[in-house]
Length: 187
Image (cartoon, rainbow, N blue to C red; front, side):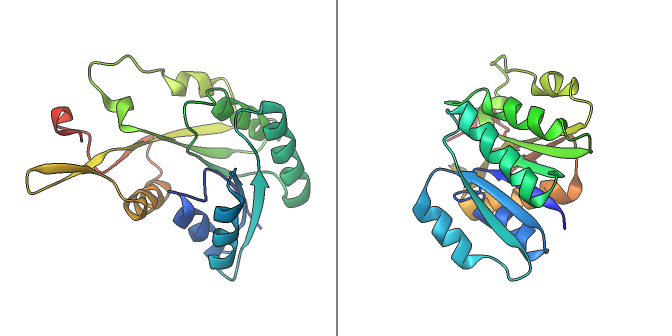
């Protein structure tokens, strides 16, 4: 059975976790909120398994232990979907290094906010950071916004989850959920 790791899969990515579980996969979900974990587990699909990994992304040693333990139980991780706030800047790299070490191909879908499309900003080129990891196939998913009736708004949790699922299916190097242009319309 395939093993998927979702970092941040109890909030905006809850339906992504459920998508994988409904397709019969083992889904290890990293998050901090026990109440949201309980809601996720109660609403999961029947065919898969949701494995809650309670961890604080800022506690890098705890994060490593939780992932290594999940791999020892469920096998190597084949897909990562990571939506990690900037308060834990090393967490995406730590996750990638761990899953890379098992020497199997891993698709890594890195969810990033709209600021990564800001034409005036200099953003870190994550692909270069992940490039040195030979087993990681890096994909960037940018969360944009929606324009309705000449007004813009942020994406809803459902729109985010549906867009990320589309990104998983299309498997493009860069995928935008919603839109990021015109930039001056950003909410």
